[in-house]
Length: 71
Image 1 (tube, rainbow, N blue to C red):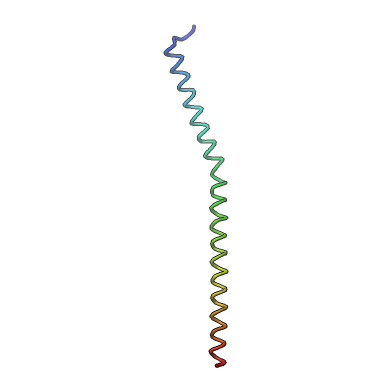
Image 2 (image 1 turned 90 degrees about the vertical axis):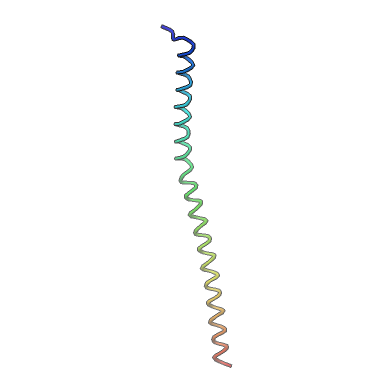
């Protein structure tokens, strides 16, 4: 038995929506590690930059204190 055109279109639309939902879930799962990995690398780079700047500042502070002690 062949369903009428209305039923065929309704079934086709439901199938298409289900495929789109599945594709959306797969895309979200596929992107999550990449985004979190990128964010983690970005935060690590910023932390590294901060630590280098802090080390440079402390070194300059130490040198200026040594010069004050000699003067």
